[in-house]
Each structure stands twice: as structure tokens, then as C-alpha cells.
Length: 492
Image (cartoon, rainbow, N blue to C red; front, side):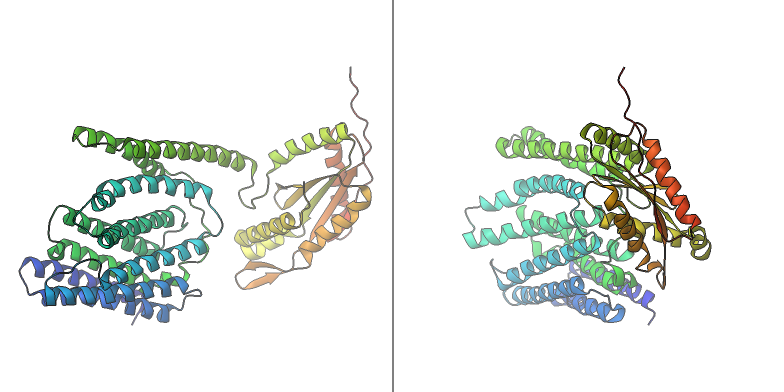
């Protein structure tokens, strides 16, 4: 079967089962008739996930295997629950099904965490703050409408209270992880959308189930809730069948925008949710939990302030950073060089400058295109930044040229440093395409000043002349300029 057709055919089966599940219950079919339709998807989901793993062979299947294990727990819980309802007409919490349902939610959460950490490794403070603001708002609502009413129900045993409270807590956890996944996932592949749809629909169905229960309705006979669960599980299995699952947790090469209108709208709604809740309870004549809601408002306010400070800092970094390579840009470097020259003049320490120009870069662009040339620039910038000593300012000076200013660098240290820099570029090949490695060399011009420099342009001129000499001498070499001796400016 065509791999691109398998997940579509599965979704057709899911849609049919969802309709039969809802229609069968509304039309008064026997319990086993419409429950069998439901169990077809419930028990089929872990099998489909395993089939997707075997079909597409993802390089790192841990997340999908964890999801499959969670769905085995979910299917076992459904089988046990349906059997209890069929034989006894109802259940009393907690039951073995509750343990399995809660285990399934925990495993789903672990799987999503695996996906998040692999797609966007490292800590992303901005996205973390956004998710935390939304999580606090959702937590207050969950506490107010689900957890607190259960905790205050004197008719429930302690074990039943803990069981009832665990469901909204774990659902909230999955909601927060879904927010975290979508806020910082880079590209939105079909597999990402299907997994997100599973998480959101599962949260919606569980929430509706809880609301019906709190209102005194019959949760076991709610057809629309059952149909929503069917679609939710079907989307999860479809995500595993989709070819995009193979690279689902590969590190995203597309950075998610730091603050989109949609993200800011979500944050705004989250921040206004708590005072809106307070006002609604006041109008309804209900007691308002002032300490809890006030504390939540204060915490969210501080988080938003921190978020705005982060946006300002990010804008400053963007203004000083080369967009392609991630190192500093020419404007920032020239300002830094002038500052370092003034400091060196005051403190009397030496200052070094390296100019690094990639050899035959036009030939690389002509042969492998600009994407290949961009790869070379990014890789060389990474090597130069990795090998730089403390206090160095590295920048892309223009085109294929990089430049670095090194405080406290003596004339004796200049040539060894320039040679190490040249070798760091030439000794290891560069991946110019996914299948091609090439050797890239660079010419290095270096200059140093032992004392005060009146004009940073003198240091730049000396390093540039040394770079020209390295190019003229055959490239792939380092040339050291004579020490720059420029008198310090006199005070009037």
C-alpha cells in the first residue's frame, strides 16, 4: 500500500467509527454494538502506531514507542471499563481502569516531552515564559471548576477524591505540553498537526466528560464525548502512519518567531482570564478566592514583564548579529573595536586583530550554489567561535570575510594563534551538501598593537594589508603585519 494513502484510509475508518459511535448511542443500539465500534479504534490505535514505526523506521523511535505503550494502557482501561459497565451497569472509583487511564496520560506526557526536547534541544526561556503564563491561567480554571468541587464533596471517599482530581491535573499537564510543542516546534509538519489535534481533542473530550459529571448527567451515555475520543485517538494513530513521522523529532532548522500576533493574543487572553473569572463569580454572587486569584494575577504580571524584557534583549541581539552565521555583524564589531582601543590605551595592554578570508569562495558558490556557500559560512563561523579564547569578539565583516579582535594578545602569541585559526578551517572538511564534503581553506591577516592606538583604522589597515599579502603569496597561509605604533592622542 502507498505510504501516503495509509494514513488517509485510516482517517476514513476513524470518521466512520466516530459517526457510528455517536449515532448508535443516540438511536438506542445495544451497549455492545456501539461500544464495539468505539473499541475498534481504541484497540487499533497502539497497533497502528507500531505499524507506523515498522513502516517508516524513524531514527529515534523512543517517543513513538512510549506513545504506543500509553495507548496499550488506554485500550486495556477501556476494555476493563466497558466490561464493568456491561456486566454491572456502572463502576465505583477508584477502579483498575482509573490506574490504567492515568498511566496512559503519564506515558503520553513523557512521549511529548521526548519530542519537545529532541526538536528544540536546550532551554528556550521565551517559550517557557509564554507556556507558564498560559499554564497558570488554565490551572486556576481547572482548580475552580473541577478540582475544588471534587475536594469539597463530602460524599466521596479520599481515594475517590484523589482519583477524580488526578484526571484534570493530568489533562492540564497534556494541555501545557501541547502549548509548549506548538509554540516552539519550528516547522508544522502534518505529523505535528495530527499529534497536536490528538492532544487538544483529548483535553476537550475529558473536560466535557468532567462537566457532564459535575452537572449530574450520565457520562457513560454521552455520544458526542465518545465520538470525540474516537477522533482524538484516530488522529494520534494517523500521525504515526504519516511519512512525516520519520523526521518528527529531528531538530528543527526553522526557528519559530519569538512573538507572533497569535502568540501575543494567547498570552493576552490568558492574563485576562483570571480577573474575568473573578468578575464572573462576583456577578454570580459566588465567593471569590481573593488570595488565590490575586497571587495568580501577580505572578502572571511578573512573567509578562520578564517576557517583554526578553523581547527587548532579543531585538538588541538581532540588531548586532549576522543573520546567516549567528556571529556579530560589522556595525557591532566596529563599535567594539573602538571601545577596545580606548580601553587598551587607558590600561596599557596589547590588542590583536585577525582578518580571515575564505579562499576561492566564488568557486564554491558557482559549483554548489548559494545554499552550499551558506553552509560553508555557517560552519566556519561555528569553528571560529568554538575555538575563540575568552574576551574575543568575532564578527562577519563582509561576504566571506570574518574578523576578530583579541584583547591582551602579545606579538609573540599572534602567529601561533593565526596558525591555529587557519588550521581549524583547513584541517577538517566541510559538508557543503548532504552528500558532499570539501576542503575549505582561508587566508589570515593579523596585526597587533603593543600600546595606545589613536585610530582603530590603523589596526584595521595593517591587518588588511597582511591579509592581502597572504592572498598574494598563494593563499591558505597566515601573514603577520609589523606592529602598529601610533601615538596616543594628546589632550588640549
